[in-house]
Length: 180
Image 1 (spheres, one colour):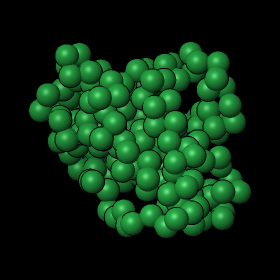
Image 2 (cartoon, one colour):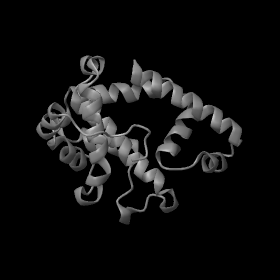
Image 3 (tube, rainbow, N blue to C red):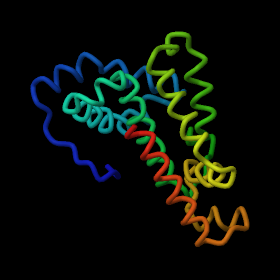
């Protein structure tokens, strides 16, 4: 697992909750048009981490549905996976032609996803986008696509130092929105 958060053994309550919501993993994969056989192992640990975080954070429970939280964690797992494979930039054979826009389109095509969690997610993405300049949006988009900050600087003809500073601002904005 790439993120700094470590999974610990689940409590009985967390196991029961994860079993009750297990279908969200398959729903996420299906709605994101990801091959379950290939991506299940990639998202399952972040799903379990989302169970831990959600059940142990009453403020999070008050703000968001578990579905929204689990989707954000699983989506992050997919992005981390693609970032690790940056040498193989988005080949369609690997099923890695994913972007924020295509996932949003795929998810929104399902009427069953027009739930509060989808609306919460869209509002969060919109809030993040509203806080970014055009340059920051380009950097954020490329970073999500798996490019390194050096590659982003080279691709856009921007000095590396500026890209690093702008990306720090992007991270702050995302953190503020996620913690709000």
